[in-house]
Image 1 (tube, rainbow, N blue to C red):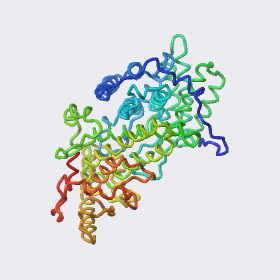
Image 2: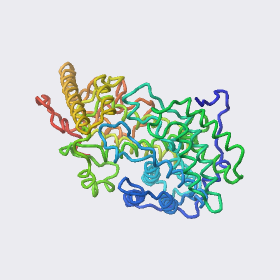
Image 3: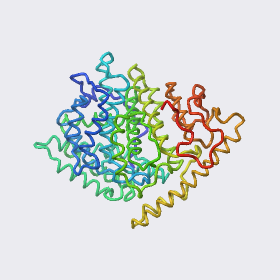
Image 4: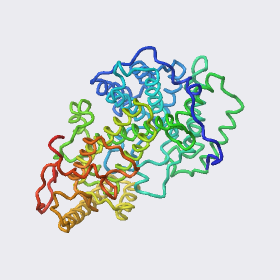
Length: 524
């Protein structure tokens, strides 16, 4: 496998290195409240799963213009080639709650992450005239370009998806290999973009050959091994050395690698600002992934979706999208396993404390707060459509669940898949009933009135968890640990009044929980 030498010095990215991509904007960016909905729609129109032939060149041109990113024609052509190649990388592989057709691809995800990142910058107040500065705009553009490129190491395919790692804990992410994939393919993209005329066909042929030789064409990493992929990458890298890029292209590739490392290989860079940018990119891309999952996963029709972060994006189109969702080939989110539920929570919150750690300017601190707000609001939306009771203790997935998911992956016929999905649903429903009983017992053993228990129980209700996150939003809580709020051993002192904000729960739980057991605060 490709590994970075631990003795290699850490590098602090400088403005000079990033200059070929992060260029000063000519005009101050102005975005209004309709930006998020309108621009997300424009991205979908170019590369949504409904579109027969995606047009990433148009997406890049549109976002570059609307967001004043300063990417010139060469950069836009190279990036559009990369995004088109990346569009073969499917997301949510192995996920039982979302149809594979609606799972999105990594290229569309990256474009939507750029839009989301700029919306959070807008909500942080950083586009206000009194806060406009070259430094603030450089921060915004660095995050934007980082969102464009952060997943380009998956251009040969997603080597291990979150859903796959949830089911098989022996799978790991492969950041060093993905970085080398990114470096090699981006170099080839700039070579094709700088040709006269530009030569996209040669680039796509290069990517196909690389994917085939690495054994990733059909089954991703399951069809090969990290060692085999690394060996092929070494061979292709040596081939490229015989025909080096010109200075302009080399500088652009180096700048992109720096931005990629800030987000994906933070151990190789140093400096508070680069680390802040890298963690901001990861928060944005994780939020975008969860928000897409929530929008397209199967949700029980009786669930009330909360729209805290982006009501203007979802309320007008949610019904049409949800009606188009499959009704039988997925498992509703109300049955999501506790382990899967907790992994989503961890995925969203793990970078938040680093944002506050590395934020040094007033603008960075404002952006850290806006990213925290977006994360907690998105978590509450996630809680509103998932399970009623959450076991906070599992360290691995249920063995029977893993077995059934493995069978699902190898099932041949449609009827066989449906039968396995229904078995999965029954298994998860049974586990929820067990968790409900554990929640009741935890409350019955509490010495105080259960309505005022200030610490979290080993098995919790959705309503109490929502109240905790709402209190964190109200208090402007700054997380100090990678451990999510939901999994802290002790609720922070300033948040222990979280139950005062919840709708008053019934002291005696009904025989079977309603879909909105212990309803969220009325203020939501």
